[in-house]
Image 1 (cartoon, rainbow over the protein chains, first blue to last red):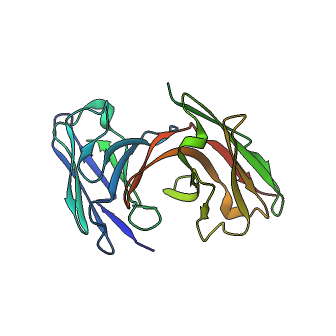
Image 2: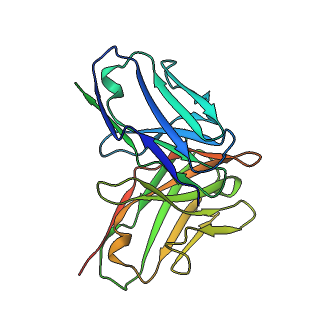
Length: 106
Length: 120
């Protein structure tokens, strides 16, 4: 199975900060990479699909990049509602998720 | 508006069975690939099973042979029959709609989840 490794596992940031989360696949997955946001007690929400396509209704401060094995989720200016856990997920072979990155308030 | 509502969770004894339901509205489950994803308490997400529009089914190795995914088109509902439950099956179970392309897919809508606790 393809393993997905996110870094960091957690980070502290302030409102207005630029935040970057990385995700590495154990083998080439082309651009078959999605990003989800999950807030406590709620279901995950799709943010980015196919590495860089913004899901309808998601604010433009979220962006994704990468291909092959290395991917990035960037929040250009962190807002209070963005404090959450973020997961990457590959769909190239079966479906596996990264372990998550928790974004906390500094 | 697309909605998915899971029911059927609860406290179940090890070795017993339980069936989860996911009632869909705003679209037809028969027209989309549908999946189950679970999340153990305080842990990450794990894909469990998928049901294709043509009826093919696939399972994670951790549940293969014990879980069965199915749908009732007349009720527009997805199911997950879980047999021989183990403590490690304890999780919130989400149903999710899958959007599929050429070699790729993504979960675009999720239900609110239902908690299954396997314990004596």
